[in-house]
Length: 135
Image 1 (cartoon, rainbow, N blue to C red):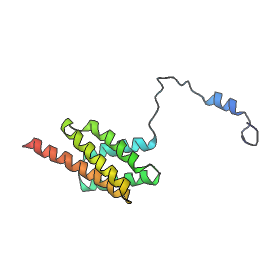
Image 2 (image 1 turned 90 degrees about the vertical axis):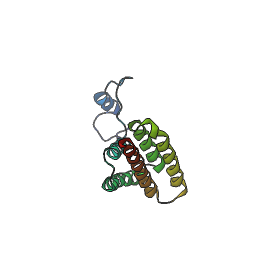
Image 3 (image 1 turned 180 degrees about the horizontal axis):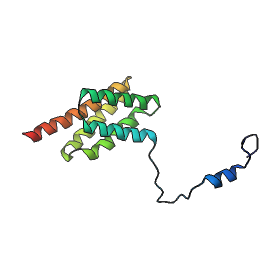
Image 4 (image 1 turned 60 degrees about the vertical axis):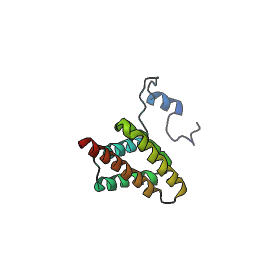
């Protein structure tokens, strides 16, 4: 690179050599920040089913939206993170409601409402299942 494009006293090749690590097929690649945050949201949704938790999750979902993560990507990723955490009998229901709210997101204008509604619906489905198991 020309000096005007690269203000450091050494060439870009030297920079790449001194900072490079061996990358192999087994080198772990961390997930993007947004995906890690959705994983954290999924964990929080599973841990506690309360209105207070919905508000906490809503703030994180809003943060993802303000960082230009598409709402459908948020919903799909959240669904994929939640599915392994629930009982097999609930998986079809979770996917059905995810598709329902994805359609609402595509048709509506206030996407945060639909994301929050999916979270609330998921919590309700899980709570109903847990209540049935108690009897």
